[in-house]
Image 1: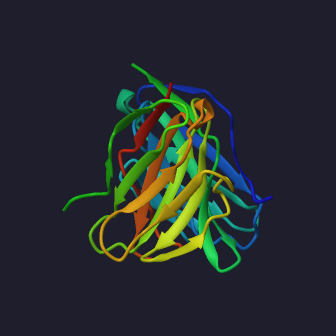
Image 2: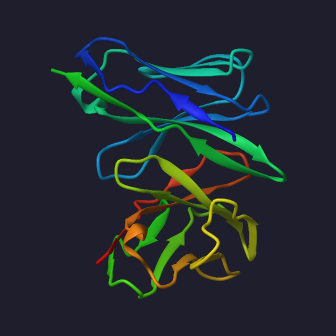
Length: 113
Length: 113
């Protein structure tokens, strides 16, 4: 069973702080990793993708990948109330000849004004 | 540049009826994925299709559910003889290549009464 696990949350941070979201995965051959943001009642929105070890920055968001530890994280700097949402970690699992995204259960983030 | 389109956005069916959910991928995307999200639960992969082919249906219930992606027209997820447990949000995502970034449509919220 290929799994993706996220810290359960909920997570609350004050406005302007750094929010840190973590994710571990069980499949060593996974090659693609994604972070999605989902507002209540809405569809998931892709915010970051990362494919190689190290950090990838995009605005206030930084994704970090460590394949040896099977760990991927998302940092949100200068958190804003509009960042309050559920963040989903997704890993591309190779099953046979196909690839499917396996999602973690999500971490609910609340940024307090 | 239209994103992934899904219709209807909301669908109400009585137990035993059929539900048909439609998905048009982003322009230039030939890979379509269907996911289901039950209330207060995570996203679960159902099926992965390319034009005229089902690539991976390992997440699809064996009975009552079917999916297609014809040469012309949208992808369709069909649920026959719906039951209350089928009530959920059904999301379609598309990508330009296997293993690549997936972009989600707004979803169809199915309610079975």
